[in-house]
Amino acid sequence: MRTAWFMLLALPQVASAQIRFRPDPAPPRTVDWSVAGGRMMPRGGGSGIRPGSISQPDSLGTTPLGRVGDSVTVYLFRDGEHLSGLVHSRITARRRFDPPAAWRAACDEVAHPGWLFELAPKPFASYAVALPGFLPLPTNAAAPPLARIGMRPYFMATADSAFQRYLEVARPGSPRAVEGQRQAFFSARGDAGFGKLTLLGVRGPGGYRYAVLSYWLHDDYRDRRPNTTGTWIINSWGYPVAKMDGNVDIYGTVDANHDGIDEVVTSSGLIRWDGTQWRFPKVYSEEPCLAHKIYDPPPGRGT
Image (cartoon, rainbow, N blue to C red):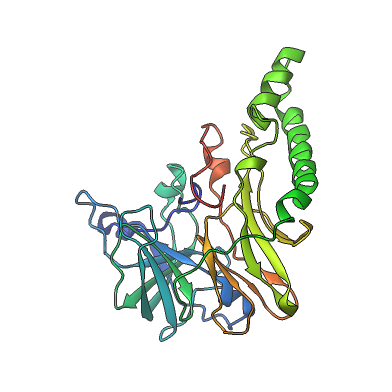
C-alpha cells in the first residue's frame, strides 16, 4: 500500500545529531500548499522514535504542508495496511531539515530535504498520511462505464514507448532475450498490467464524471533511472485530461469544499481542481538509488 520510494521520516533520536535543521524560510503560501502531503511511520524495536511526528520531503522548501496553527487531517492505518480512521489536528511546530549524509549513502528512502511537523493532538498508528485542511473519510465511487475501454489505447501507447526505451537501455543480445524482456514487461496477459489497474470515479467541474488511476510499469532500469510511473485523470471516454509522473496509492475521494468537485486522497497529497486545471502533489523517488534491485510494484489502489 505504501509507495516503495517515498517512506515517511520517523525521526530516530540516535540520528538527530546528524540532521541539520535550517531556519524556517517562511515561504509565501501558494496553491501548491493545498495539494501537499506528509507521512508518519513509526519504527519500533527501541529505535527512539518520537511518535506522532509528520515528515514531508520538499527539496526546494517552497510547499510545506502548512504553517503553525493550520489544520491538517491525518488518515490512520493502525495495522499498517488498512485505512481505519482519522484525526483532525493542528500544526504546533514546523522545522526545515537536511537529511544526514548517512541516509543518502544507505539509499534510505527519506534522503530528501524537507519539513518536520509536530501536531496536536498527535496521531498514533503504524502508518499515517497527513493532508492539509479539515477532510472527511474518503469514499470510493465507480468509474464511468466506458472510461476503462476508452483509455486502453492511450495506456498501451505509453507502455509501448516505455518498452522501446527499456530495450535501448537493456540491449538484449538475441531475439530470445528480447522476447524474454517483452514477457517480463508486458506479463503473460500482454497488457503491461492494464487489466489490474483500479479506476475510481471522480466528480469534476461542470458536473462531468472523470476517473483517476495510477500505474507502475516493469521497466526495471539498471542505469540509475526510475521505472516508468504515472497518475492520470481521464474523462468518461477514457481520454487523459491531466497527467503526473509518479505512482501513488489512491484511497478515495472527498468533497472538502462541498462544491460538487472531488479531491482525490493519495499517499503523496491531494489531487484537486483549482478552478482552471487539475493539481497534483509532488512525488519523490529514490528509485535511481535502488535501481540495482528489482522490486514488485507496491500493493494498493495505485497499481
